[in-house]
Image (cartoon, rainbow, N blue to C red; front, side, top):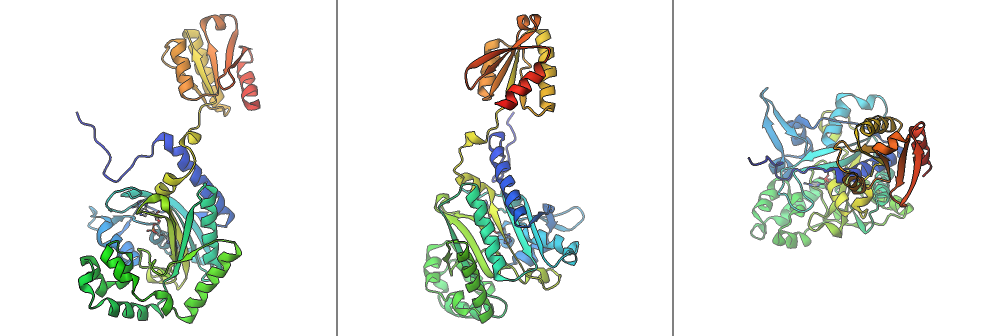
Length: 421
Ligand code: HAM
C-alpha cells in the first residue's frame, strides 16, 4: 500500500532539525523579553473578514493565496496567512489598550499562504512576529529594527542588508497614488495582465511585480519619497538618525512597498544574497491606521516578522551542533542486568541526566554501536558477570577511558562523574 505523504508545500520539521528551531526561538524569547515584549498566542484560524479588512482586498495574499473555507456553521474561515491581523484582533477583543497605552507583543507559529512552492517558499511556513502598539515615535521604529538586527546577529547571520522606505500616510499617499496611476496609464501594453488590473485598484502593487517589463517600467516611475508630507518626511529622517546612533547600516529603497496594504510610513526588509529569488528573511513596518480600521481606537503600531525556514536555511551553524546527544547509554546483557539498567536509566533521567538504554538484548557489540551512533558521551556496561561481582564499567566514549564502579552507590557515582565532566 502506498504511504500518505504530507500536503505539497507543507513540511515536517524532523528531530535532527528541531534543535535549531528551539535555539532560535529561545534566543528570540530572550532578546524580545529584554526589550520589554511579552508573548501572545493567537489562534491559527480566524474569520476571513479579518484578513480582507487588514491585509487588503487587492493584495496577492487575499486575492489568491488564502486557505479559506466555508465552515459547517456557514461562516467563512481562513488559516492565518500572517499574524499581525490576529494580534491586533486580540488586542481589540481583550481591550489590551485599557491596561496600558503601550503594548509590546511577540508571537511565533505557522502561517499559511497558497503560493507556488519553491526554494525558501512554502505553503505552511513559520514566523517569529513582533508588534509594538501605541507609540508613533520614530525612535520606536529604530528600536524594533535594532532588536531585529540584534536577533539576526545572535543567531549567526551576517551578510544581511537592511532596506528601508517610507510609504507615507493618508495625507500624502493619495497624491502619490494619483501621480503613479497617471504615469502607468497609457503604458498598459508594457505591463503584465495583473499589473494592468492593479492600476485601477491598487497601483502601488506594481512595484512588487517580478515580470521584467513591469520592473523596467517601474524603474522610471515616480517615487513615494518625493511625495511625503512634512510629518512623514521628518519621521523617516529621524528613523534614519536613530539607526545611525546604533551603527545599523541601511539602504533606502524607494521601490520597496511590501505585500500588505496596512503599512504607513516606515517599511523595512532584511534581505540576503543566499536565498535566491525569495531573498527576504524578515519584513515589517508601521501600521498607524490598522487598529482603527479594525474597529478600535486611533492607535499607531509597528512590527515585523521573521521567516523561520529562510532564517534556518542560511544559518551558518552546522546541523551536528544541534543534535543533543544523550549523556549516557546503558548497555546491558542478561535479565538481571536489564532490570537494573531499566531502574538506573529512569532514575538518572529523573535526576536530570539524559540517559538512553537498550531494550533489545542484542550483543554487546551491537549495543555499543548504537551508543556510538547516538554520539553518547558515556556508556555504562552492565554484564552478567559484572552484576555478580557487584560492579559496572563506565566508559568515557569521548576520551576512550574506562573505570570500574561499585553497584551500591552506582547512581550517585555516575551523577558525580557526569556532572563533573
Ligand atoms: P511578510 O513580509 O509577508 O510580512 O512576511 C515576513 C517574512 O515571512 C518574509 O520576509 C519571509 O521571510 C517569510 N515568508 C513569507 N511568506 C513565506 C513563504 N511562503 N514561505 C516561507 N517564508 C515566507 C508579514 O507577514 C507581516 N505580518 C510582518 C509584520 C509584522 N508587519 C508588521 N508586523
